[in-house]
Image (cartoon, each protein chain N blue to C red):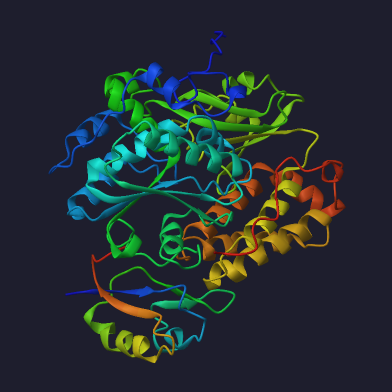
Length: 70
Length: 425
């Protein structure tokens, strides 16, 4: 089972915690909002990704099973 | 060079002289015959005919109409909602308000047909409060049908909302009909999954619905007799800018921009570039645009074509449109909220000559960062407009960097950038 990260851009206000905790897959744009790599999250990064998701004070980023939604 | 006949194809706009106003029910019925009724089913019978017609929506994705109807029909169980979308937030477009004002019964026929086909419990016509003529025409037309004792089969009402650029995006329409602000929401769920009152909802442009009313009467073969095999049928186009007779034209898809310009009385000055598809569309140099077949070589989107003459400044036009798009952002998503303001102010600095060459690189980088990162496609449209402006007016941008405003900058703007409703409800 692989996962993808999905940002809810309306909830996100740019706390940047996710990019701090998962720099392998999350960059910040020039205004400090996350740009998420579209590739699936493999086993190696899953724990870090879960931590990044849990750290968001807005609940604006989630892990969704690969192939779900957009 | 062959001379192509310039007759426009009158389908949606056939019938009485437009100066006579809304076509009355009696004239509509005499001209076209009784309203075709839809039947629900799995799949509904009319969906096959719709699929064969090749009709597509007028949004950026040009989504096949039959697929959209099927998706709602299969989830409806008699509960779905169908919305005729007459929002028309594009300032350079008049087609939807004009169609609603002049041919209200075609729109209502299409809406009722869709409601019956997908098995809907309710049908809504959604339009901006500002569209007085369209509103009056539609409500008079619904009364006419009730007076004639027509069995509408579905609850039918008109809902009016704010006139704003993004208020017609389908999730924004649903949000407004659910009592909220007419701002786009995060998808999924899409309206066909969970829309008005949580029900499967079909949001369809009023022009697309009007086409279905004719396809149901005359068949998919008739529909395909105009246009090309890959882009069948006709489309309403708003043509403006440096042409002798700006206005509304119905064209067969595949018509070239040059033919459309000729239908609008020809250019008033040598053309420099053409904006195709509205404020989220594309600038193309005249040499590329004029031979391009609309809906074939270049997406037509909501049917907006604006001709820029060599005396005008495409960059100055783009600055004003970016200011408009930034103002019209729902300001919900960071990349749109911050990004569009940055695109506008930086391009403005380029045009007045206070920017440095590196600012052009910054604009290109921001375009890459912003695209695809909003809840809706509003920021993507702004990026498309700017990217194609920087390509089309690349030489002009370098001159502006050195010398500031050009002669064209001092001319009045061609593209309208009105102040729209300030409220969202």
